[in-house]
Image 1 (tube, rainbow, N blue to C red):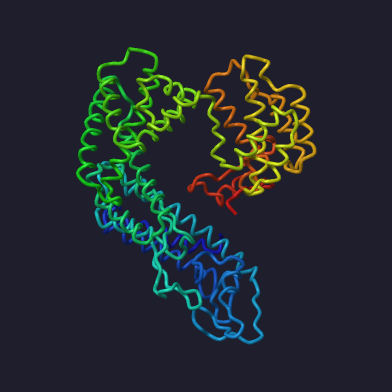
Image 2: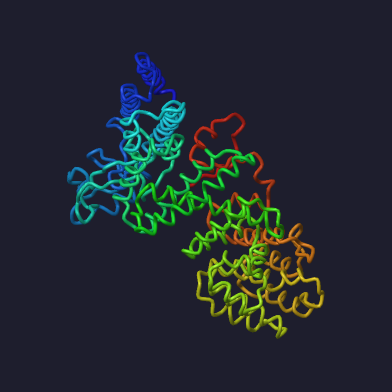
Length: 563
């Protein structure tokens, strides 16, 4: 942006002067001037870019998309102003100035280009600010001053006035979340809970930063009232706390491993006593830290169960630790469910199922699960059942068709399908894998699909409208014949390999039919990797697409972004 080079030089010089008296940005004395310089720089660039300065849309508080400039010089998104204007009362929703009776909305291409450039400049400023905070505010072993931490937490919120015609029921200013930025002009359209400050704070002792974390938790909870949002909030805190504990524990030696086992065993016993004395407030950071540590303890138990399975070589401390975990899990089935899921995610469904047949490991499972296992002969668990009743209906119909030798039951199931049509092809492909392909895992060839069964299914694949493309038909026929390279099912496969094959088939089915544009680069990576040579996929918040576009040799490439 050559037109603002002089302004950038001016404010770079002013920024340098902020550090001349005291270069420690951990102090409010230095932090405040730096913030002021960045904000003033942004304001001057805004004024230099447009006569009346660039402001967010007063309705959605984002950069105006398809900007419309009213005669009063207030700029709105085309969609936002269209919703606010009433034919019988043509007023600017922000300043209430009347619009001409014959006024028509027109998108300004010139203003759109200016806003795009300004948005990129603001992104560069935000990146600089985050680098400054993470590398200088939180360096060494001492956190910033209390006032600086409070300022950083306040930067994650912005209070915005509600314009006329777009008011909430109260008509009062509304609180919004926003990125960690010195600027509050652009806010989130829907609440976003960010972990960047939490992770920076957790570099230090929990006791040193507990009060700040509690303050942030209380602020977010105050403004985000939906229960689903609260669950997301608590989960984010627990994840951050758990990551921090893992980083601080470091690599285990045998000596430190024994120490951790003893400490965690005592923690589980003490936590049980503490929680039994009275349920703590859910929004307590201390309680969420306890949940994070419980997860770490159960993760360690899953690792021990895998390591010691089938052996008697465990140390006294390891066996005592598992006894403590068993006592702890006996209080609440959710602890058992978390442990079972962890074992399954890490070591596969078959390994988890092997515990259900051994009485000494029954404590891992909820009582109802063991009762079901004893009542029914356990078989290969169908993980695709997470798709729900419509998948189960198609799968059961395919199983019935294999016995009958014709596909009438499958055709009826597809006709009676009541779920989203976009999910039906994926569920059909997964049912084919479950009822046909998985049969090739048997060492008894008489249990493999017969030629008659395959011909009947092939005819259904070719004639049914459920598979709308040749690629989907080819994929289904390859599943039927167990002929997908590297994904063929064999009696010699380990439980780990079978889980990987299931996951890959599931991913392949979703990517082949997925309609969401975000799947397009992933589909190319999976099926046409040659199309993705030299591709740039911005997957993290710090991946700056605006910077990457300017790199040498990037001309002519296709860019994937969230838009």
